[in-house]
Image 1: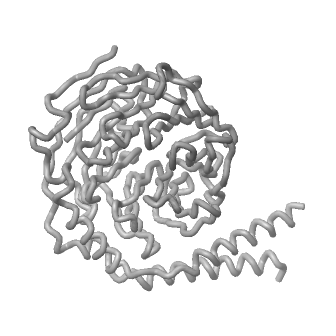
Image 2: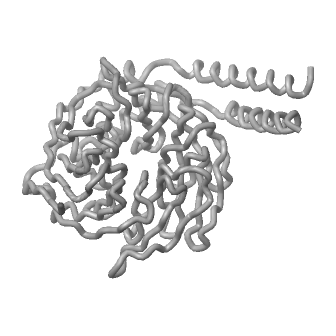
Amino acid sequence: MGELDVLKKEAETLKTQIETARKAVNDTTMEAASSGVAPAPRIQPKARRTLKGHTAKIYALYWALDNKLMVSGSQDGKLLVWDTHAGILANCVPLKSAWVMTVSFSPSAGLVASGGLDNMCTIVNISGEKPKTMRELDGHDGYVACSRFLSETSILTASGDQTCGLWDLETGKQKQSFLNHVGDCMCVALAEDQNTFISGACDSQAKLWDIRDGQCKQSFIGHTGDINAISYMPNGQAFITGSDDCTLRMFDMRADQEVMCYQNAQPTAGVTSLSLSLSGRLLFAGYDDFNCNIWDSLKGEKIGVLSGHDNRVSCTGIPSDGMCVSTGSWDSFLKIWN
Amino acid sequence: MSGASNLVAMKKIVQQLRFEASINRVKVSQAAADLQQFCMQNALQDPLLTGVSSSTNPFRPQKVCSFL
């Protein structure tokens, strides 16, 4: 056999080995294991704020660590920063490129990052009198779908060029690139200790990465469509993904496999976004069908709905104090619920 | 040329699979138990789960903020 054939055979053997090892620890399902757990209360949060200001579809939102400021990005070409407690607009950042897909705050909220179809991640300083563009991170060969600050000087990006990147904001250069997905990278989430992160992509896989050396440590299969959203469970050992295949799935990193699937009885709408409450028990998921479903993450049951938007819910977020959930929509409005 | 790059690509794939195959895995029952314990322990500190009283709710009174 040629060397290539030998390698192909070894690859198949290894894949089978991984599947066998996963089955060997698959001694129960999350659902079965949670059968003795008391059901979560049927909650019905109310819309406490409706934020009107964008004039086109909203694509992204992000809460500041102060639990008060929230930034939203819309294809009207603006980032709007809201003081959600007082109910007023705190800042407005005009964008060079209107095609925004992601927004985020730095830990101090003095910087905002946005990215999109311009293939760049733009960092703007909003702590001064007027917003000032600080850096344009240029290097991806595809759109920037997600960006997350590690600190005031470091940011992680996910791109349609099938890679994720770690950038040094002092030099504006990429410090590390993460290559293993074979589809557009759509979302990332950072572990609390920032040594690792997880990504979701259009190859239907989620991956766990070492931030320092770029090594892909684990790959998680199960979804049958693009993964649009990803978030760690607060215990840091599991994560949840949302996909165009109309499901959300929980993957446990120590068991190295999918442990739960959240699927509507009639699954017709893709999942665009997801957020977890502070204890991890409540899973809020935004869908193409204009709703945001509330799931009991342990028992896999749907326990509520947030309805009120007149178009797709494109983004959701829960601040670090867990006091509310916010939703952003193609109807150009943001709502805050509790 | 393409033969050589196929070989390089395949070597990378096999290397990655070797790495992924080598990890230790914990039983799903253990993972589930740990997750349940975490959720239960933190349930009372989860405002969306317990509900937010009007007196402590930063989002009362209700407001529509309009900048159109």
